[in-house]
Length: 431
Image (cartoon, rainbow, N blue to C red; front, side, top):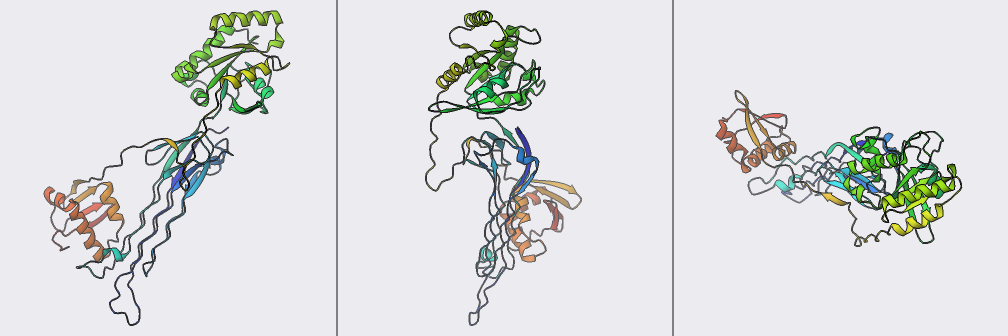
């Protein structure tokens, strides 16, 4: 199972605004009528219950949403770009480019990970008493883009944990329709396997958690990747081999797994447990009963102890009934109001990037202005267009950039660099 993927997402670019003037027969002074550009499409993750892994992202790593259409004359606005929807399995966690973290757990949940760029305004917006026929419009801006990492955490009700070759895979195969790899030598499952336990009135999803080794909580083996798969389960079944092939102590094996779980996450240590003593067919019945009694005395009444055999089916029905009783049903998901999309829950919002700016000298007669707001403002305009440049100077004055430059020693004719674009400003130009 592929449980991590890194993909590049890019929101659609916004469409450009239109520079247009109304021209009709017998209609003098028609005036500007340029329409606005459409907004670029967003990149949205959609939880799809038909998926179980992130394997599809091995074949495609780049995802780009549709751009917005350009505005046209007669106040025709460009159409916004369609959102690019990317299907992901339940249990997918991701941090969007805006810093918001999303946890997609129910089918239909949506998470926007990259915003489309805004469209530019047409020249109609810039008409006024002193500028009645503006011959410029705004450009659309690019959408958010960057790499994001998807992480899948299994949505299993019950997790089987234990050392390699403890008998978890055989137990899962016998109790469900899963088909994990089973062998008679000590090896560890390399990926989690899911199976569904059918009871009369409900189903339980059981995950064969890949085998842990000592030091897994510090990353030994595939430590953190393995342990991440048990974080959502509501009950753990600790499978312990009654007859370890390497001659090790069952008590030591039990302590190793419990230590790794506690070291990884305190929540795991507090989950309800069931201890399953597996491979009872390989030991005498009296010996299995004696070992089970010892474990019941050690663990007390809070942790049930069962003796099972995947080869003969011993104790499996009893285990299935016990699991159905110990795992409470999930409460029904609340339905979103009609016409509203259900967004991913567990979202953490961070403050937006600062809208201020900084002025610094870049050498004799050269200045550099940095800041997200002013950089986006410059990107919207064609600086080869004199009217657009004059409008831009007015906007820079309005937000305090001109005053800040003059306070720092700026003189008319000096070069100013904003967003990698160098141009001359004339603070004395009337607005």
